[in-house]
Amino acid sequence: MHIDYTINAPVSAAQFIDLLERSTLGARRPIDDLACIEGMLANSNLTVSAWAGEQLVGMARALTDFHYACYLSDLAVCSAYQQSGIGKQLQRLTQQQLGPRCKLILIAAPAAQAYYAHIGYSHNPRCWVLERQAQINQ
Image (cartoon, rainbow, N blue to C red; front, side, top):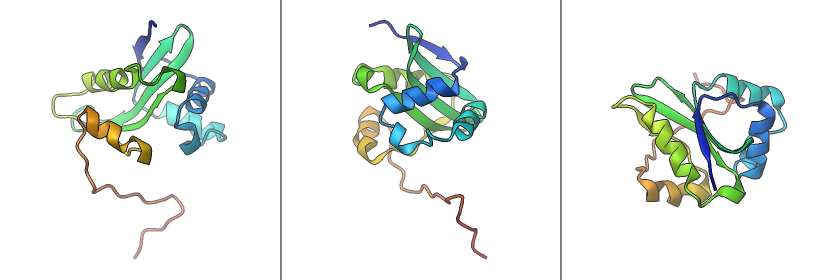
């Protein structure tokens, strides 16, 4: 199986939604909100995509300053292509775009906790989330 990897190549909202539906991320992303998906893609400043011919089979979507922190917002691999190293390669290529002090940061799905530990990430329990509907307390 030959996979081509690209850095910051154009990916349409339809292609991204299709990939999310064919991966395990579809259930946790707003695939029914086209404007949100379009905004997610338009405002990412680092993407690495994996292609089998014309078909998008994997993508790492990140927000980064390239020097200190890189938030890996999405790591999606089509279920039919999982266990073939595509996810690891997407992360390697993402990391290669970053400066020498820049770390990858992500929020793992519950089922992926062991995966990230296995490939070298360290666990950090200090993440906090403020939902959009929540208000900052006085």
